[in-house]
Length: 415
Ligand SMILES: Cc1cc2nc3c(=O)[nH]c(=O)nc-3n(C[C@H](O)[C@H](O)[C@H](O)COP(=O)(O)OP(=O)(O)OC[C@H]3O[C@@H](n4cnc5c(N)ncnc54)[C@H](O)[C@@H]3O)c2cc1C
Image 1: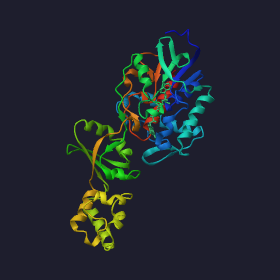
Image 2: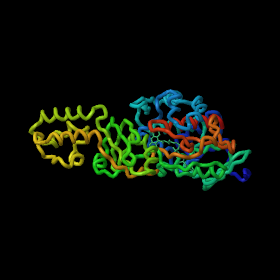
Image 3: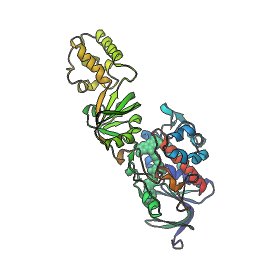
Image 4: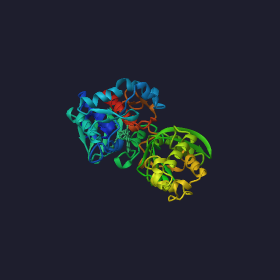
């Protein structure tokens, strides 16, 4: 490695001005290091701005033990990192910097302002106020590292440093800049990279009624997943209907399991729109609605029968019942069919959506190759890795960003 021909020298280079890179850079700069962030886009944090639908689900408000229990293979490996920076520290960090946080349903935490942009501003300020430099439109092309330090090459410069933090993200939503460059860099240094695949990803379905509901969300549903007609598992939670299929927390958190089953055969999902009411009770409820509105057309009472938002697609759900049919002429069998269908709306899965729609990509550097107490490479002690570069299974609900903050803090504290 030729450090002598470098035209710049700093203590720490951070590749990637996303969530974990900016956090790591701010932390290292706070400790007095001369830090340079290299970001290939014209501005930092493009993915961060997409988070939580632009509101940024910044973390999940639970204790460390509960949090880690959701991380699969990361549970043990990240214990020491979370002992250094956990969910409570995230609250303190942002609130101390003038960004109050609020806890919403399912312990999801958002900035009170509801703006991801405010989160990004705090991070950029954290770097700059501590004397760090953020250089945008600076795409790193090559990385060299040995025992004595690192050299990083961009289009226009060769920059040497004592330490390197690689924070280039995973592969989801590549238009935000995370195109897998970091995986190539670490491979060139001798690391392995587990094949990234889309994770926390929406499910593509064939059914027209689902697509027609695009934009509607139903906050409490039960879905049961069938493989080749055999029941596999069920979960309850919120479903969001989209123009390509199903999304929302319940779906995103089941996508990995559905993806595995898809390799084995045909997948059908049955959605129970009233999981807390049995068929007899539901039929009773429908009967009461009918008794009150005997002379109305069924389409005009649909809103009282189906979950809010679904009345418009009544005729798609029940094609055998003409929407103009008067309630008094609906047979007992037809009424019972309505109840049975609402308890088991069938959806044919055609696949999982790709990286362009995934919240995170699975895969990345196996944690065994990283000393997670410092987020330091076990192959080259000058190199550190953070955020979505790491192979950690996680749920939706603020878990990914908390991992970005924690790994960023730990790497920034160790360099
Ligand atoms: C639509 C969407 C919504 C999400 N919502 C949430 C949420 O609400 N809560 C949550 O916890 N998580 C959420 N996530 C996941 C979360 O955004 C990521 O886990 C997080 O951004 C990872 O941070 P990171 O620093 O590892 O990578 P990123 O934020 O992806 O940053 C990587 C940066 O590296 C830069 N880069 C890449 N290659 C180079 C190179 N060669 N040279 C220079 N720069 C380079 C990229 O341009 C990018 O800016 C969401 C993700 C998506 C896609």
